[in-house]
Image 1: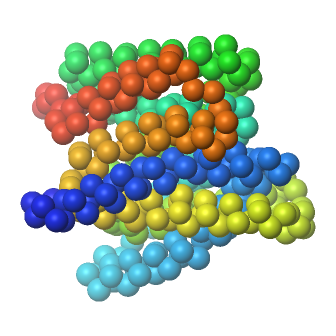
Image 2 (image 1 turned 45 degrees about the horizontal axis):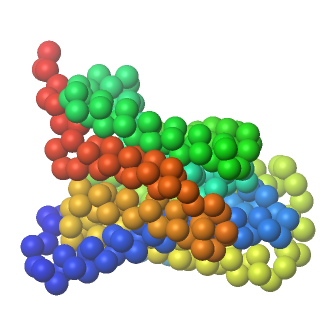
Length: 312
């Protein structure tokens, strides 16, 4: 869809992109609050996915009806790829992410996840033979230097468990980058909302299967009401709404502008983590965050990573 040039539509798009970035990042805040009630990453993930399932099922039903109207039936190969993407992008990535949040502050978690464009860039280089301009390599190096700076500061403030948590969140970022790299052509064929809805349903099935194999469901139904309230907020406001907000913003602004506004996520968490959770905010953390955001902005701007690939 061509981005709108209407000023009112663009203002709405900017507001939707900003809200989507902040709400999606806030899932880390809600997970941290749930951990205070003695549950772990798998509990948080099962509640989040289970409560968001009806919303994504409804979205998938609506998008499927639209697609059938256009004669766009999915092939077996496409259905198989959707299963792979759902397990990889929303099950594995979310599991590593919530697990890592047990050990790292939310500001560092979001900063590491924000390295997704660098992973997509590296996958393009090593898996697809894409060419990258020198300034993109410099931007990537700057991004990782910023993360290293923030991680070193958190090691000083939080302790050595930050290393384990950072490694887990880095795995989450890598899994999601694989999802992005593999989903490009499928998005054009299936549609972004339809693909997200299907992938989230697959992820929910994988999560619930994991939970059934690992533990009994009974304790999950006997938690304090505050846990369910936080899980419902996570499912609706930090999972379903950010997806729909972001897609609506892309339709109005284009993918490049919407991606640049995602920097509000890490910035908001630096201060939300301090305000809501009482996490330490230091000058070094703020400086490192600014360095990372600067590098990633270069990688996500229109025209980045666009060095032509020589034709054989």
